[in-house]
Image 1: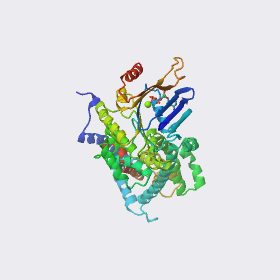
Image 2: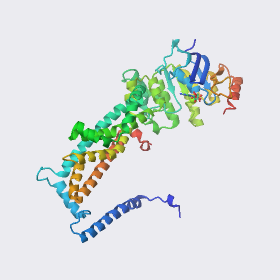
Image 3: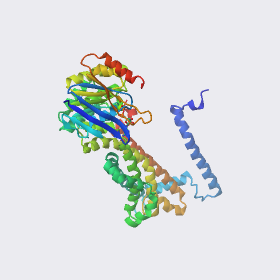
Image 4: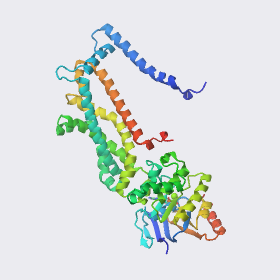
Length: 273
Length: 246
Ligand SMILES: Nc1ncnc2c1ncn2[C@@H]1O[C@H](COP(=O)(O)OP(=O)(O)O)[C@@H](O)[C@H]1O
Ligand SMILES: [Mg+2]
């Protein structure tokens, strides 16, 4: 018998092993839900799969009689728009500041301490300020994502750029490269895959910021919806929405990872050989 | 006067003296091997020649003009590692220098010819991470020579390579040196290599030592052998110097 640490599941066995806990959890839920419903047919806390499916049908396929819109579609579009603009602005700012701070000692001396100071502020704590300054509309939600992500990403990217071996920077200069050429052709391409990686790490916090801002002040959005129906204990809406948000998060992460592998094959050396 | 001259050059970091009273002339077309124990200041010496660092005292001249403390296209370099750009293909790595110098229309043909010369004609579209150590150093050489530098600075370029690969590289470096009429300064740990390739061997070490304060004295050129004829005595002297340290 080999040691436990040397037993490696392979192929179908491995997939099966991964499915077991998921199926067990679903089964546990079904049993618990059934038990509650035999005691009280109107139980709202653990809705049956059938009840959730019925709600999904209403939210995802039928327009709301008042607004004429399909709720899930409108919520998803609003949230993804806020998310997209927020992380897009954060990415562009990070690229400019990260390259500047990482490559140019002058910029590092000037902006490094400021960025380090801002990075320690918990973003949610400045949410009231954002609501006061930018109002309760779209801007404050986008700015919260931007403010929440940018300082961390700038620090990460500038450290990455600063860690480009000195040898490469000297080599580029001996080949006649100006500061601009070094920035655009040596530092920028090596910063991009790291930026994408850093974005992937930041997606989790970004969802937290988005849902928080939507929960507090909004009239559409995934976070708005789950906090709205919370008042009616509508778990049959909340649970499918949470699953949907998770699926969106996984899809976004997968898209970024695929983008990086496609655009920067050299940054994923296992695939080169 | 040589193409590169060091006049009473010192390098000090605070109280720590790395190089002291270093004076030497490098003749155009010579191949200078630089040896010395680890930490003696060989890389520091090359950084001075590159302009990556300025001396704390003394002056350095390139063609009689004071050297600006900044790397430039008249001095090419190959380091032991990290000399090539990991995000560019082999061909793009070499084209980079031509594109920096002028518009890159002829860059492609010229770069392909250079890569064929160093034996990388079949790897144009590979990324450096997919090359062996020896091939990466061939690429680094092609990349450095495409801009036709007058001086080539090599900091232990073969230090990470297997012995067999080294022998091939010796041949390549010697040929390129002749073909391009280069002046080469090469730091190496391998004394055999230094005497085999060089037309001159310089050993850098501390001339005096203070056991209580090891940083009190810096290194300087303690041996300087021209190798216009085989110099067995010189080689023995350098080997004796390196022996207790290695
Ligand atoms: N920026 C620096 N500050 C302080 N000491 C340094 C610095 N750079 C190099 N040194 C010291 O200078 C000495 C010579 O270094 P180096 O030229 O790299 O030696 P070698 O290439 O001969 O092994 C070493 O003792 C090293 O620790
Ligand atoms: Mg060294």
